Image 1 (tube, rainbow, N blue to C red):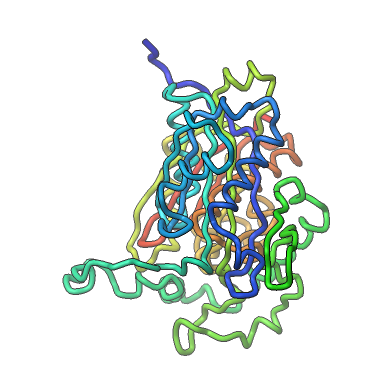
Image 2 (tube, rainbow, N blue to C red; image 1 turned 180 degrees about the vertical axis):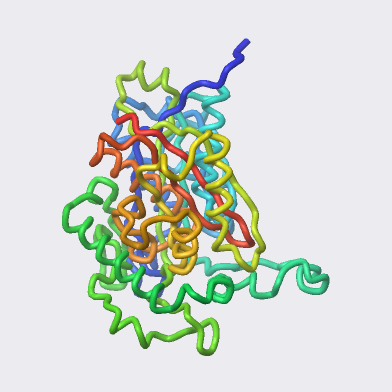
Length: 395
């Protein structure tokens, strides 16, 4: 009888580009499940040692599980991607951390000898399914004051963090965001993202096109042109489209495998998960979730933030990143460990897919810096949660 958990590896990750969620966005006429199928097929094509029949589960996160994101997405996309009928699948929902949770579930399953190879990731088509579509919050949340009503509006939660940290100003948030755009442009110009993207042929009102370039990056952003952007969440507020992530469509996934199976197949892994953690915070301050989640995963691993070489922090809003920087005493927005390839303010945030993107960026940084040993992926989650994953560089 097995008594110890098995070693697990992150083998490879890939994503579609992230499109803008609007009628003229690149994925406006593309189904969410077809984007997932593209990711699954691309992963298998890139890793020919892994045959379709070797995939023992297909786990996908999606926040709005209806329409083209419903009907147990993990199972339907396994069938659509051509995996054997014997390959099961499931869907999970932890809002923005849906993909992160799907991957963590795969890690745990393999560690517990449930499977040897699992594909996992997340998808969100926010044009087809606007945030909160079909939701019916229980009236007790408000009538019994279980949560502040602002918790149901993500932009308002960011304004609340500005209220909590008045010294972290809008100007600082704008400066952080411009720096993010510059880092993203440098990474794109260097070609660091090229092998993360699976170009996808899609139908548009102008005919067939190849979706091969993220639509969200704004390399032309400056403090000057950020200054007068609209402030949609509060009169005189500090949160703008420039210092927030976008509304986006996209899918991202990865292959997780046991160390034994990777060795048997001759596959060179990229990272090894050390541990993961989730924590809750006040729903109206959901952007602070990465702080206690990071503290928890570090404590459980017997590590500190000083042990971490690279941090991939999802940028739902710039203000939450400023709070994270302050809490962990990082070296400001210039800290070389933080989001070195750019973050969600530049690339976009298709909710459940973002956790998988964070892992891809971390794997790329490990590849570029073989001397680096440990990395952290962390993100906030709607209704007041945070998720964090610790990784070791084995590449």
